[in-house]
Length: 74
Image (cartoon, rainbow, N blue to C red; front, side):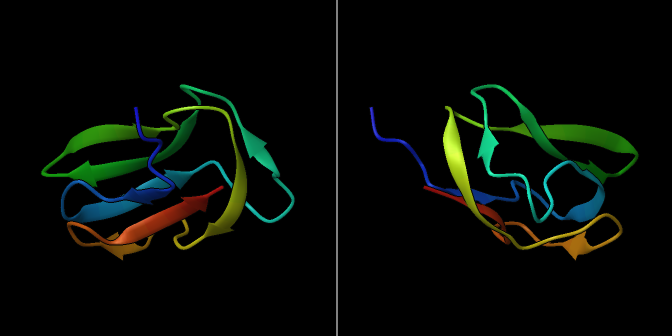
């Protein structure tokens, strides 16, 4: 199974919580990365597997569109 290194938004909304920031080096499989709110529903985005964080492209309060890059993992 191929590991997806780019975490992209699955829908338009607002990033209400972002749990990664500069200094966080790794995420564990299943770890919550951010929460996107759309139409008053909150959707949790999680890591597919344990990985090193390469960069974070959003912060709490940002408006995101479907397919927008949120986090890069390696």
